[in-house]
Length: 230
Image (cartoon, rainbow, N blue to C red; front, side, top):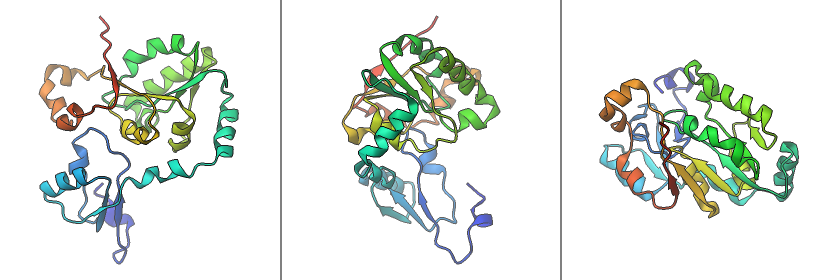
């Protein structure tokens, strides 16, 4: 952040609702003094934040997910029709992070998987907006051209909630989507096969310092896969 004073009026109350609840340490450090109240999704996280010295906390639950319980069937059917999904096939939602990411190691398998499934791909905004990650959207644009059952959502589609609703299974890596999908009680596959930058392959500890290791190790609700490409 750091720019909030430029966009928030001095007399305004600034409330922070975090965009995701993933596995990076930035959850505990990406804080601006201009924030008056910070919405926290769980008592566990609230206690952790208090342990880091934060005091302006309000336990709200993860308000982003309220709409999971108020989504009309008509809206779901419209989205299925817009994507031209094959209603005789199950639908897989692939929602990877931009970094570290499973994209390079998962993408070679998507063509085969899409033969028997609808495949919806929802990329992180940085996969479109940051030049160093543009290769990610280019890869899937090309793949969606040759695989009729692969549907890449454009960057303009920022709301992932409807696509949780129409999917039968989620594939992700370290994205916060795994926590958001959990209330639907549907299978979640966590791809623990990251492609790391050279500096993080050489200095591995630099990478792991950025991650919430304890929370990652305590995940017990996903099916974990590891793909090693030699």
